[in-house]
Length: 180
Image (cartoon, rainbow, N blue to C red; front, side, top):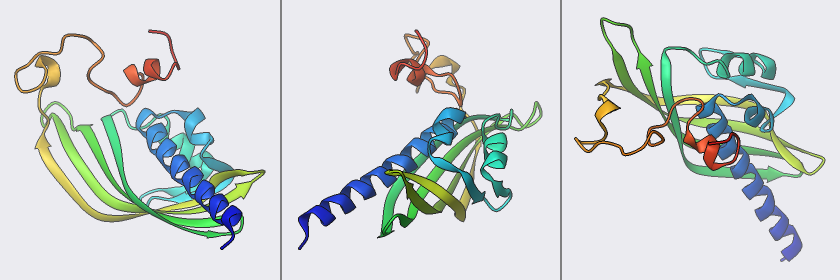
């Protein structure tokens, strides 16, 4: 057994998992800088309802839809097959979306379960996504959103930073991206 090859494979798999996690975080926050660090500039994507080159993806995700008030991507297991400086990865994901359906309907909570199929390339020692396809396994509309203005289960929040949002929430302060 070649320990150095096994160690390199472990490091490569961890770098790929980290890239996938950072990408989910970037999508939740609509952060162009984070997203750009995960995809190669010449990459492509296919989300079923929308597909194209990386520039198209960035123009679609970063402004996001005004109606999508909050998102959260929860990642499950990732299976990675390495092949030199390329790799294929399948990652299970559940994505929550709070959607403003307008005055008559109000805000609704929805959830999607699926899998990301990513093709990775390692360039100059860095792993990035060359192509991503999304497979949708299920969708659930959970109905009318709860009013979080009063806190959780009747217990009020004691500060302004407890609830998250699609962009500009306290996690940016936590990671030092903007001053408190």
